[in-house]
Every structure is written in C-alpha cells, then in structure tokens.
Length: 155
Image (cartoon, rainbow, N blue to C red; front, side):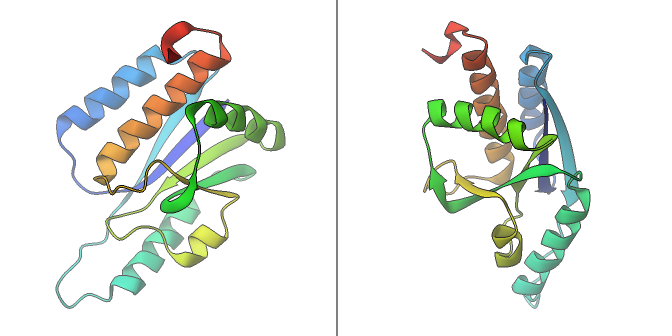
C-alpha cells in the first residue's frame, strides 16, 4: 500500500523530520509512506495570496501519482475517528493504486484543489503548524496500520 503525503513545505525544525522518520521505520512493510514536498511560494505584504494558493495547488497536483485516491486535508473537512480512518484507508486502497494525502501551505489548499479531491479530511477544527500536521498524519497512518494488523498500539 503506497501512501503519498504531498505537502507544501517551508523550512521546518529538524525534530519534525526525525519524528516522521521514526514512524516510517516502525511502519509495517505493507504500508509504504512516500513524502513528496513542494516548495512554498514566498509571501510578501503585497502578494496576491489567492493566486499563490492556486499556484501551489497546481504545483501539488503535478506531484500526485496517477490513479491515486486523493485526500485533501482541510480544517473544514470531515472529522472522523481513528477507527473510521483505519477502515477508510483499506477501502480507499480497494479503489485505487495508492493514496495521496495533500497538505496545503500556510494559507491552505485552493478551492479547486479541494473540489477535485476524492475526500476532504480534517484532523481537527484547531489550526496546527503544517509541519506538525504531517507528524499527526503519519502517526495516524501508523496507528491505522497497527489496527489493521491487530496490534494493541491503538489502546
């Protein structure tokens, strides 16, 4: 099962990458996580934020592997439980070759990118730094993998 985490990325502290790598090491072999980063566009006081978000969305779309089930992360998306997430991952693999989970930049994902996704997911109604969202997502994928393998990690 290939899971692609496609994100708009700015410079992040080294502990972010170390945390993600730790989960990747622990991940069962059948759950392969690929990190695909797209550089964030620099924002200035005079920048057209809507245009930047749209351009980042186009750049992100170019990185999504073909025949992938696309899950966009957005704070207004559907909130589900860990158990539901685990079941959905298995269901999504039944319909496509891979899953691509999209994390937008500091201003989120464009309306077009959200509308063209197969599913819009929220990890919380709270706002988190984008690098932290990536750790939370990888941890939830790990937790789903453990549930799938009947491992007691989820207790």
